[in-house]
Image 1 (cartoon, rainbow, N blue to C red):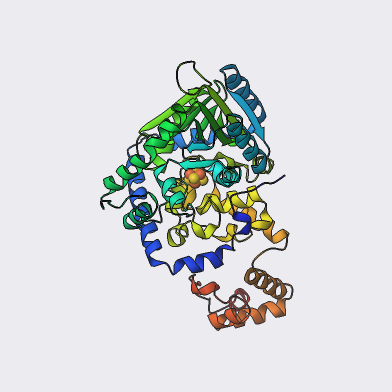
Image 2: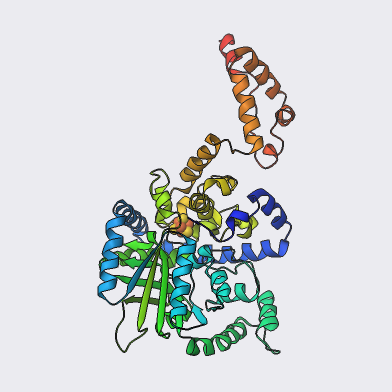
Length: 462
Ligand code: SF4
């Protein structure tokens, strides 16, 4: 098995990467400005929904029911999609998925693919597999195009180039699109991207997409987006390949009613996405002649098996938790070393990839709970972070300062004399705490005032 989450296995630990990024004031300014804008838009459109909490509960319960019967719904999807003319492939891991997709493209003698926005293909590193096979992938989502042309990495789930500002994007386009003239307005940049992509949309015979939802009952696939590039990718080519993680299944078409309200409001602060594409198999004379679906596991069944963290698979990738997270808002997404950043990345990457590769990520949180408050499907991220931290401690992988602190506390608490001495030391203030092994802990946290008396001293005086 080659379970792979992009290049997360080779990424440096979060504190090391974050320290470097905190020095980049331009990046921090870009991230702060962009997340503020999305947060404000989200708050406005969520406030106008009187039944928002009920919608969140419905979104949570549909996912809980789906995961309890995931095998049944996946097979139901396969049967319905096949009956409608689609071909369903099952991939256990990243390599298996990439091999199937490359094989389909090669079987049609094609060397180019147009791609709509999909994080799952970043997860399997599909573009690398394409390039190794002599196939050129063209990203068509504007943010993904910026990332591809700039040889950059995504830093946000919904807006992958969120860390870039207008003038940086303009320079990337000038350097890579073969143009010499380009205005400075957002519409000038959008027009340049449109011109660059239009020819590829019309020429390339194979399209590739992810999916936001896949309906078991009908075998339909749903993609929501803001630009219209996704719709071009899923309608213009002769062959369409769609890959998504097995958790994207929902039982019925009616369930879309809940998620198509929750997702746009949480992701981009829109009441509805401008483009909602839903298709079922193939239709002669309309759209692609051949349709393939890749159902990707790549570690998901491992998460499914853990009852305490299973709800990680509820995620509909709206990124509201990233925009709300005080840690993400300081560091940006690259510090997480994974295509999945922010609070959801801190729980998803270690579980998918294997805890041994990402022991620092569950600690990349202040546990303030802002992520839980905004999550449209009520994933209790702080609880899962604590669950993962416990697993790390049990396997002996906790950070050195935490291990030293806990060892010191354990040593003191085993003996009343030692405990008394420790309490007296603590009454002297913060310095002894730092001296016994918590350096740095109290520089970023408010240490509560130390009581003048211990409980025993107070008790004796009564
Ligand atoms: S965890 Fe919740 S808030 Fe975060 S991306 Fe997933 S659905 Fe959105």
